Length: 70
Image (cartoon, rainbow, N blue to C red; front, side):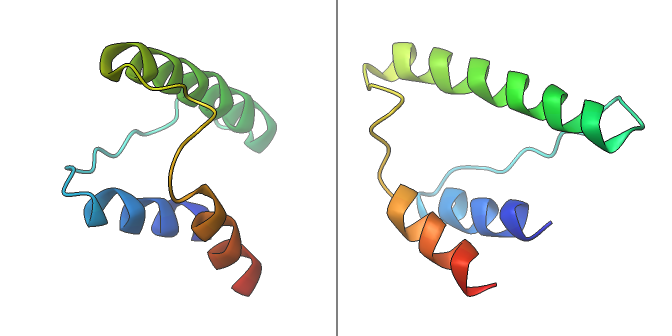
């Protein structure tokens, strides 16, 4: 929940609309895999669309620092 809250802050700071996605799996482990796979594909395709390498994203250091505070 903390990670999602911080992610929404980053997205909103970049003037991008936030879309909430409800995970289909009921078990936490399966939800983790579902989210990991979904976000991996989203990052990959957004990188292609915008001509950006997905591993070089601004705010990653800020994001990690915010998580460390919690």
